[in-house]
Image (cartoon, rainbow, N blue to C red):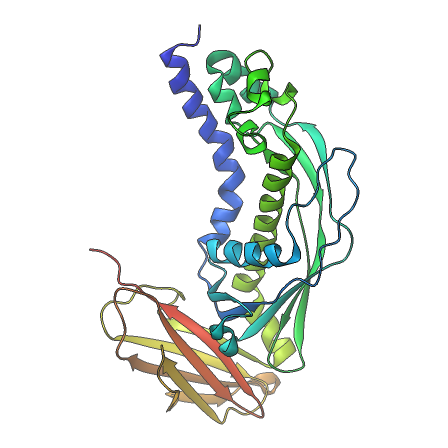
Length: 330
């Protein structure tokens, strides 16, 4: 008998696989965002491969760009992520372009959770439909190019992972598959191909965004110094994206460049950049130059995000974007 106890048991067990499936993305999302405004360009085209399972990547090139923008924002990849068509893209620190290296294919691999899905289905029916129980192989290989406003870029190979979906991610509630699930375990039912393709497409884009965000947050600045000859380190507060304490706050950051640093300017929100004087400067080993700036930001908004644009002049101009706020509720 499917008892009330069984319902509570299903809810508690359903949370276990759900948490394990979102935990990697949550870990990346919890890292501070990279100090960048990123403009995402339209994807030139989506290469589609044949699938024996009737599954197909369910997004056009334009839809894929919008999905990638949303996914990068959801994982808090950068201070600001915008489509390249928006006005804010004119002040982007880097432009992101995604290009496919081979056709995208999707295929069903098998059942990933007989015990959880089958056991919960026997006890509660609905519980078994909420567990990720079917695994899929999504072959999506692409190059992510992060282009600077100079003829230089960082190119990273990115790809998708195996994906597991629950019954209700593969099917609508009002469907023939739901009727089948009354007598068959969810992983033995026939699934709606359109719904499954759409769910796999979204999860694949989320996985790409997670991979790109992990690089931006952990490795980008080091690669930027090697490739573009400049990087920035936030010293106070220690994390980009920190809340503002009020209408003003003290920040401190270091600029490291391959060439001598001539000027550093800072702009808050819509203000024009104003030159700031480094508190200390030095030439380090390997001919790197380092300048530390400490200043009190004024005119901050406590109810929304504040963007602080840093402009560095050496032989060339480099930019970064910090984000602070809104004020944390007491």
